[in-house]
Length: 83
Image 1: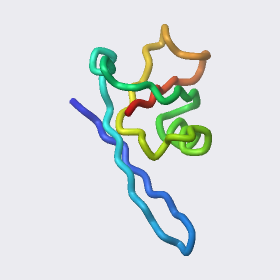
Image 2 (image 1 turned 180 degrees about the vertical axis):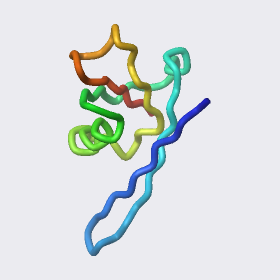
Image 3 (image 1 turned 60 degrees about the horizontal axis):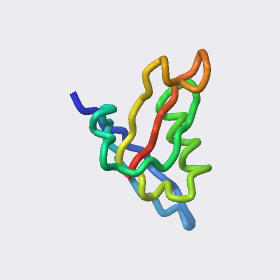
């Protein structure tokens, strides 16, 4: 089942923008552009890191939680972000 992750960005003058990205499988990443990979304790922390570190975070449309074998470290998860 496809999961979606939604968060709200609070900008200048308390303006709120809501963004939603969709979870995809490894096979579904074919033909999509990898924007970056984040590693943290859960998806929401990885999204936060991507929003702060990825110059093209506004273009993120999809995310994929990497398999344990692909993870960047132990005790955390790795999440790839795509457009």
